[in-house]
Image (cartoon, rainbow over all chains, first blue to last red):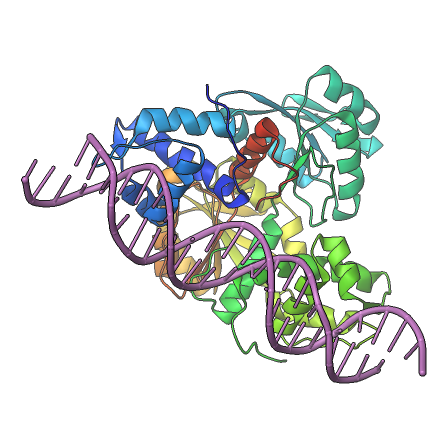
Length: 217
Length: 217
DNA sequence: TAGATTGTTAATCGATTAACAATC
DNA sequence: TAGATTGTTAATCGATTAACAATC
């Protein structure tokens, strides 16, 4: 189990989940070797980028054969923590929060949502899937007791930062921000933004002004 | 109604929805002027970036006062198409597709989901909110008849590209891709990727290796 | 006027791509 | 061996930041 020497750059980190997903598919179909050219083709990158990326985490290939699929898969899984279970809580029991809790996909990928919280008293105790909505007062204690390291912010935009502050204070180390707000956190906490409406709006801009085949996100 | 001279770069486009959201908040609270410094502070940018961005779409401020909120809001709304209604369909009536259809937020932001499709016969006719799941056979006709310009791909990864092909063939101009797959489309079609699991995995990497306060997305 | 904030140019930074010797 | 594919260095590209004259 090799620990990472240097930190990976944000652009490399962004590609890791896609490498992982694609390589997992190869592995499941029994493919044993893959070249940087094939990976690039399938993920919409250049082979240069792929080789540079793998160099970043010191995964070596073999000239004329490429990269060993099983080793690569293990390496990627370790780097993105796909080989462990993450206990996650959701804050906000609105439309979005409820959908997240009931979305089976997450637990299959190792993200187990074990609690949901809301500021609205009327929702306390309401069942969502197998969880009951809890009061915000219980959040701090729950995070500590249940060893929660990640929280999903699914509240109205205006409440985003204050919820983030609560989560950080409770000891959470990673925040998935689904609000439009810009979330400020200490240096030892990570934030990843995931805003579906923003993606739709980028898209509508591109449709209106026909940006030539432009990706975003 | 000024049409955009040159195309905006991807990084500028990515910031537009956040400018819009924040400026809308200012407008709603009756604020009339805003400086690049304030915008930068609130959105986690530098004032240089803000001024550069606004120059891109030729929105002029006034020295010592800043930018007029109402004019800026109108400009941004026009650029991201927030001043119109978009008719959208969802492909995939699994967990995710159902959640999207029932998520009230979208229609409030101008994205009206008017159809949901699935390849599984067992789901035909099933009600989701006020929509009924339709057969894929009907997709082409529906897109043309209902003037659909955007589609959301919420199917298993392995079906992503073939669904994209169907949508493009039907005439859809923008795709929101929620699968892990890399989607290839012609130049006159836009794709925006939105992958929650990928965001969670970027986050878990950062938590494991404590990337110093690194955003992604 | 004096001071603040703009629009714009130039400098920096980081990420991507190209090129190629090494090597299997 | 000959040919393909790697790891790595150098070149390019694009995005961000710094700096500052113009101006309200």
